[in-house]
Image (tube, rainbow, N blue to C red; front, side, top):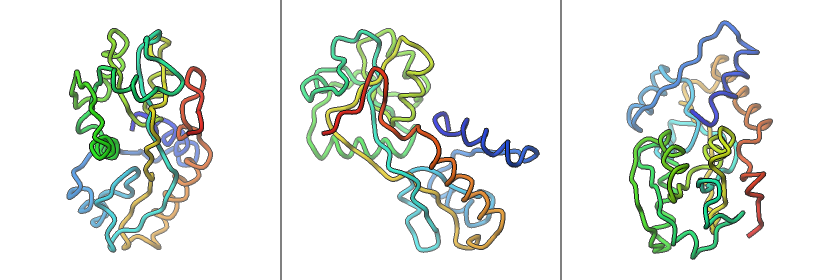
Length: 210
């Protein structure tokens, strides 16, 4: 919501200015039920639990991760080295988004032994902890670059690995031909085609091919 919703809202408001827009945060079971009943029009993001025959999906883009740290951090490089990443004191976000599960599974499979200093359930607290500490947080590109654009006290870097996942639209098959759903799906597809939050960090952290 923090990363994508401002642009989504701006786009929708120009095309349907009298239409209020709501966001919700639900468990997988509540989300599936809401989509089936029509209480929720669209789920946008990484929702592997919706890969069921009753739900349709449309791939929007590939997305990845970046590291957030304070400006002037001694470990900063455009792309962190493996030793640098493992030497850092990490903030791990739990419960802030399903995409974090992709990162944690990758680290677990690779048996990478991070030094975790903080576990938090609130991603919005991360830049405040990072800017006054040696901590490093690994979050989706769009979140990291949003934080880095708000203050020069934090900067972005790429991790020493490329972990990506698909961002998708999900809806219930009951609404395949429903004009409201078709319009909304088309609008969201257009937004993600035209915007650049899905690119790796630029400026202080140029993308390096691995």
